[in-house]
Image (cartoon, rainbow over all chains, first blue to last red; front, side, top):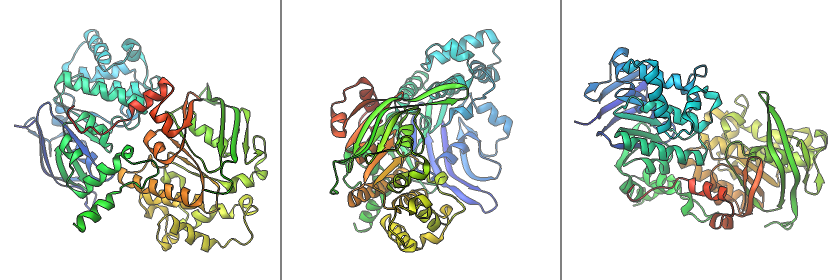
Length: 278
Length: 268
């Protein structure tokens, strides 16, 4: 049985039931890393929210999301809370909004731990420091005692990573985790993510608009467009021999370094036109 | 190429800019010297806080240096009062990152695009009797927007179309210099290529001098023949783009280049 099994997921919003995700099915095995590529409005974040039971109340959800054998659709708040952290955890784009600005970072990480294991403050602090160290934060003691605004963006995102990993979840969901970071910091955070995922053996659902970043982190990719999956495959296959015109356009247009400076860049429309005219 | 290519258009000497941020003293620019010739395409890359946006705001006369001097087209603009900056306002136009926040949502696209033409300062610089309707039609066509786009509001357009509107607005007063601050950073990948193609074509067709600020080295490599790498308020490397890419002279530039994620096509 797969760790995560999504079947015919439909999500729509509000009274007009504007569809955001339509008939999405995929599965993820233990330890596997699946990238979800798509542009704004493609449904990739909504899919992640459905997997974690975090959709807003005006969402209408159909289909099935089984995580570790438990059906997430329709599960009550207590059931969801039990799964979050232990089975699934999340890393979002903007670390500042995921952290409580009034609470020291170490306490926030410990809080996640305490919720699930009832650890005392002494040993909990040791675990927190060890975890902050593991995600590559130099001087973890100082970071633990700092407030979020006293840290840089990269440090904050690593603190979030520590929170996401401290309960050794089976699945870590990352939604644009490095999009807000500078490119040198992004490289460090991605390398660290790769390392800690490898060490913990956690599976990862990695959502990004950045094809290059996805290719660095993941084994498998699925491409979403207008709420649907248009193509899935291994990183190697999908990025070297994409099939769907949309994927072919994305892959071509994402590789700016392949074009000579000033040369006309290929666009997605080119590939649709090509597909039409055979 | 225009007939005056090669003449100096911008020069800055020993520019510094300090400001207060929540009780902290920030040195955004720390002694910048830079020179740009007409017809050049300069990319300024750097990470957040490097001072790259501050630098172009000073060049465009949108902000004043704490010390140092700036010249545009041979005239020193450092201490010129706003009412004497008309020539700069008409000649130097900017395009910003997020067209959602840079376009007034309550104005029709036609009014937004012709707004620079109605500015008193700019009007004095332009030939008498610029026909606004005609100019609007011209620039809408130049950025591949439908002729009736002018009657609609910004929210009726997609992100890529809104950036086209911002570019059309910048083109309206026939500028010589286009300064684009992260022009494609807020756009989806599939739209990014279209806007980059548009910028490339417009700059070539009109012989514009281009300044592009970006955190994305590949975007700058595509658009610009000149490159300045900034860090902590200083220019750490400056040269021909192709040269800096193939032979970076500083460790910092090398780190930046190595950090650019690239699509992996073989085993991890």
